[in-house]
Image (cartoon, rainbow, N blue to C red; front, side, top):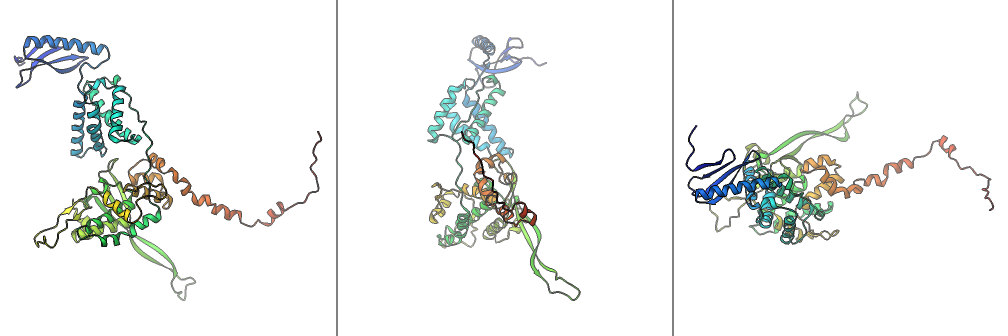
Length: 464
């Protein structure tokens, strides 16, 4: 066994040690409480004073333990920064969830400013009230329940890290509640409005300046894909690469209702059928809010991505998929003016960070920005709600299938689209089938059974 360094001194055997770190003259101490070693600084340079301070810290830790308080603690901000570092490492490694970015934002922008000055084991309901006040002030509004649930999940990660490291006892972790205002469902577009959005793009692109035509064309393809897949605006599509897309082809046989000419030995001519290839796009979304998933795109998405491939590469969608390119799909060419025109210069492909302002401009110019029903502004996310509404009311997609396609839960679909129950049941409420049954003529037996019979009997009433 190697000799103890002169920078390490046992104060109480198997319970308390003082030591110096490499390149430091300040004495640290380690003590064992409940079979768990804790570290802290004595803040002393003299060995004798350091041993005395270490004993005091050890006795204080024992007292804290007996009184159900963590033997040693740290500032909330230090634990929070440690959690942020871990979350960033998870994201960088590819193992992190999409929601981790929201956690990092909540910790950095809300928790550290509001709770950073507290020791983590002193985070109580009074401290949480301060956090609530800070949050309302920063948001300039009452947070929604959805926001609070995200914040609570992030705060829980910080507190759980403190418990894991022994800086806080599990029994002292406050219960986190979410009593925010109910989230308001974003206003969707009606079927007619959605049709108008698609129909007006080409003319709007033509009217744009030379340096805006490509980005306008890309907005068109982006909007059409959102409407066709129900994807979330932002990362789900903007971070999608050609290598993450598949094209499925299926031969479909359609009956035309037209019969061929009769041959001599035939009584009925054979019905003419036509074959066509049905193309379906499969998007392997990697950066979804709820993790990875596959989403299905129909012909509108196929045409949109094919247009992007043609503009940016002079290739077809199938050629780009076969190439396995890791380029982002939703990009547009950097504009090169005649003055800058250099035959050796290759225009860069630019990936937009957001289309929000450009989409607002497009909607405003076509009188589609504000819903005439709710008087609320429509945004890109409204396209997702439009997709869900049309899928439920016209395509009759089950909520379980829709939840998988959109990367959400059945409960969330039911919560946000329960108002569509009457619309979905419109055919039933019209009573078309039952009305037809009621209009059927009675057979002869039923006619006799329910035929009108005149009676002479009079109802007698008792005199009181």
